[in-house]
Image (tube, rainbow, N blue to C red; front, side, top):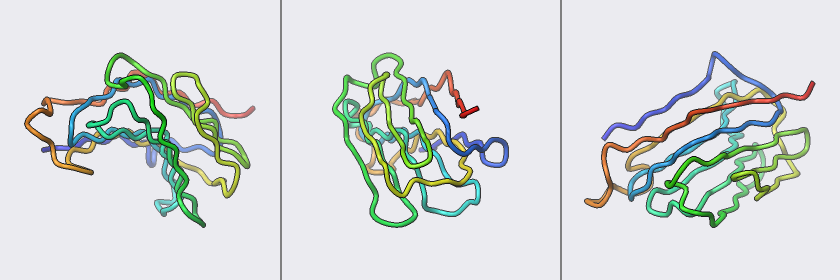
Amino acid sequence: FTSGMVATAGAFQFTYGYVQFRAHLPSGPGLWPALWLLPSSQSWPPEIDVLEVQGAAPGVAALTYHPIHGSQEQRQVGTANLSVGWHVFAIDWEPGSIVWYVDGRAEFEVTGNVPSQPMYLVMDLAVSGLQPPKASTRFPASLDVNDVRVWQPG
């Protein structure tokens, strides 16, 4: 299997803003689509996972923050089947807070230990990341993203 990734490291970075992805997700055991932010310094953590979905459970969106200090914070949100149609996933990242949105609804908020460093965007579809594909997993599979927008405070 081959996994794929698109990242803006070295080409586009930002600190704070509203980040929005419009995506169509695959489903099936062994597929792991994700939309996330990583530090431009190439250090880890922090990491802001705008969205992760285990392909075997396309109705559960994992919204996660990995802070520099302390434990990860995560909310798993039950949603419609995210592999059906296009959906919008976003965060509003400001000094002191990050708010996650799924299809326009605020679903999760972190208000402590928020990063204040430049970050870049990552979009990827891992195969066999959490579990191996099964015979029922349809291939080829893809994470389709047709729009990415970043608005920054003026």
